[in-house]
Length: 478
Image 1: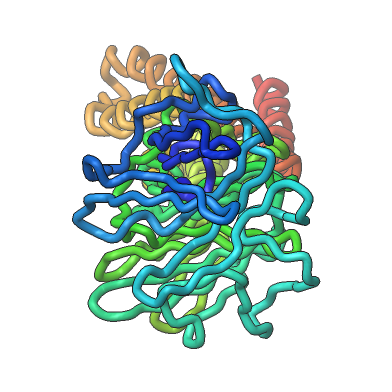
Image 2: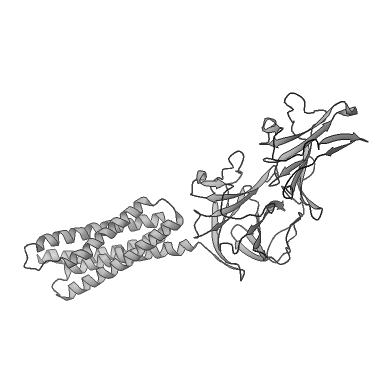
């Protein structure tokens, strides 16, 4: 009989007893299940505080009766695993190795109500995983939730949201005083993990996630909190995070090829920015590190818990597009227009100067806002765009020098004017070349597709065509 935090064998502590036929020998020991192979099942180890001299096992009328007492300040773990060993094989001295079971089943028990539900079956019985059911059932917010395992909160008043239609994710939640929030995430079993992350800013980095998995064969499953300190697998830390998960409130079950992940949080108000993810097919977290493989797909929404409404999409997406549009308009169009006017319309003095100064100032302001939005975006997403960011900062510094150069502009009669012109013109040319290159590179990094590249390319071609016409006219005049 094993006591498990998640319903899976690995990580559980078990009380194992045996009596040989005719009572010739017997014993009872605690084992710790560090893995699924016999050498990972360690005798006389485990998390159970067994009271001394409280254990015994007896055989009566062909039935075994195994007795033990545990000392615990709270209720024992609610996930219980039962197993039977191979016929005729018993643990024996000196190592008391435990052979692999021939059958097992797990249940989740409500100690206060003496209620239980079938959870996982091995051997000849049919199983789809923890809490599996062979009945046909689909899930939607219009259908009645009917899980074959006991839950410790009222499911009749759950709010329901289809949160990721592309992957069939459905989120149910409710609040009960004082400050207890109950969640049920439903999704088709991807034969990998499913995850729901609570993010302070809409990005993955800094989020705390509840991750659950059950293999399609029902061979194993589990559920853990992870803290996302970065994007690499070794930066996603198991058993860490900011979520206050209630003890014994976590459950993952499979019914009709769908996973139902249940958990309760203690909080005044959960973070509204939620991130959902599914893992790569056939890859599961496993002992000893429980490393989480990189997701194959993800989505994020913002939930209004009070109204039960959600907005699909990453809030960072709007910032990303504003960043792109502002920089294209500022550095990639207006600055170029101002440079064309300054080179080819000097006979319209002083109109050309005021137009040039006004357009360049507007381009600088839009570009500055674009750079600031880019820094905010980078802080939210925590992705490596160091080259793009470095070029953007260089462009910003050059534009600041250009703006300050206006204040130090010598008079036309000054001998220093030709050096100022040389500096001002060439700095502007370098700025424009860097801006064009960084815009195309930014579109590539943003994975916005060829539409944005073609659109800006057309605008750039028009500006280049206009510049060539004026440049040809200037050469012919000379």
